[in-house]
Image 1 (spheres, helix red, strand yellow):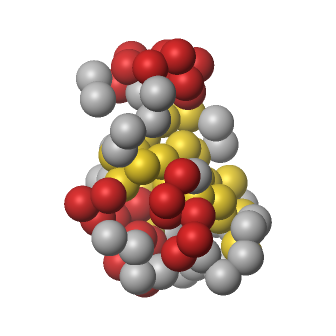
Image 2 (cartoon, rainbow, N blue to C red; image 1 turned 90 degrees about the vertical axis):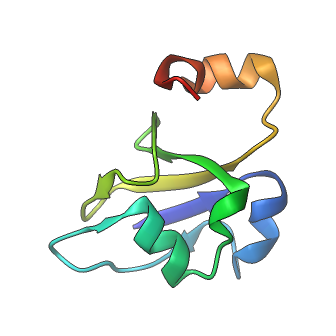
Amino acid sequence: MEIRAFGPLRKLLEESPFHIEIPKQGVTGRELAEMLGMPLDEIECIMVDGRAQDLDYKITFCQRLAFVPYGTPGPYRLILGIKRQGR
């Protein structure tokens, strides 16, 4: 799986994009963030294959994921679909 992070979260990844294999049964965004040592209180949502999801979304094999921090500017929130998710 390809993982990216935006804003201040980007510096927490060794490289961007970062590649990782996850268990076949999948993991939640929260579990993945914890595996990578990312601070949960700084993550507003995850983007899974281009769609905004909350941290409890189950991630499966072969998906692209990005961690989105709090403070993403208004226009980008709308474009990314964060507003529609009620965040």
